[in-house]
Image 1 (cartoon, rainbow, N blue to C red):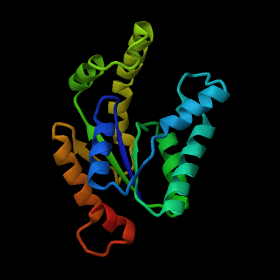
Image 2: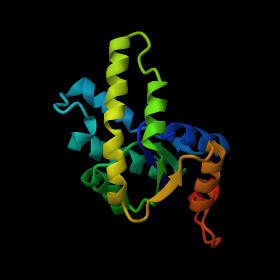
Image 3: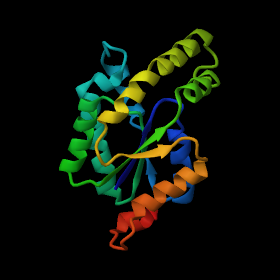
Length: 190
């Protein structure tokens, strides 16, 4: 099983996944950005966004499937993924492999996102780069907001005004189900 935590930059994806991992230390945390960083070292990324690389999408799905199959543990994924075709590429490959994906999207107001991004430092040693990264993140607030209506129908939208503890409670309640007919992976997260 995969718990994919989606949302705009600054929405709290990583913080939520850290809380889920704290509560369920057996879960694996998988950050697909790492694949993007590796690809940037090997090939040119003409658009600057490694998600535009078909190879990135294939590798993200392939590694996720491998983690679930090899380790038989829940996998927690904090990753912004909003392009409708890219969501289909990744989630479609996971579905084809028989992997259960619980997709959550943290909704946070544009104002709060801008404030959070402004308060972050990505490259403290390089102020110019730091500002470029902040601007890149802020430039993606509108597309993230617009994409919410195109996400898969089973996406669970989380209220970003809730505390991390409350969000984690909601995620764990939803992946645990209500019927008691849970497989081993679901029981390990609930």
